[in-house]
Image 1 (cartoon, protein in one colour):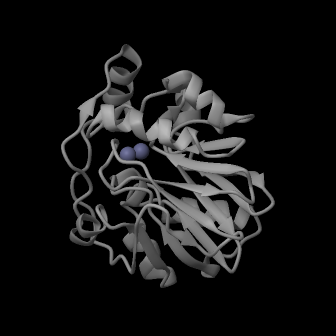
Image 2 (image 1 turned 90 degrees about the horizontal axis):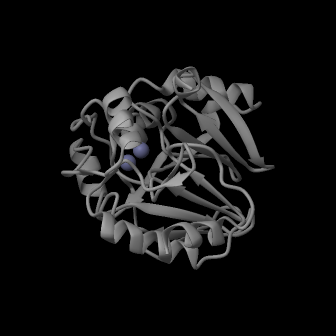
Amino acid sequence: MLSTLFASSCHEKITNRLYQISLGAVNAFLIDDEGLTLVDTGLPGSTANIFAALWEAGKNPADIKRIILTHLHADHSGNAADIKRQTNARVYAHHIDAPLLEQGISGRPLTLTPGLVNKLIYKLIIKGPITTVAPVAVEEKLSDGDVIPLLGGIQVVHTPGHSAGHVALLLPSEGVLIAADLCSHVLGLAYSTLYEDRTLGRQSILKASDLSFETALFGHGRPLQGQANKQLRAKFE
Ligand SMILES: [Zn+2]
Ligand SMILES: [Zn+2]
């Protein structure tokens, strides 16, 4: 279990144009359309692992044109400044998290979700969240309902709770929701370990579950396959 959690990097093809990149305890994603788009960037120091996963998938990191950040936490956005520096990629994030990202602030106060597994994850992996990282300029401030013109239209779904500016991304052409830390799928479908506001987080999960997708991808854990929207609703309703 722990060896899987701490594996350095590998990629998994989700569809012909979408890959999940495992960076040990957290996932990033790669969209292959009009150049490459990275969704999330791992912890600071993850660039070599991400680039290795791209090469392994037959892609050239120099083709990274965009970085979409699902939220401000260090395990998703902490490495964005470094990848931007190396690729000159344009950065996208929700307008509520963007100002903090631009100041290098990687979180607001969080509450631990009850339960033994969450305590364990917190102690073993999180060990107290990183609160400052390298600031990154955000050129594209996103809002709910925005459509990013890739894969025939990626829909931005504002899903606050885990973070006030958390977004999920709906990829209708792929039948996929990149749910990020909306919830997790490590040892089964569950709340994320930490939330700014878990009640709001639950509302966001239900909002997302109204959308149409077969597969959900998470910042932490495995892809959820087969009517994933219905599975989300059944679990959290
Ligand atoms: Zn997070
Ligand atoms: Zn996370």
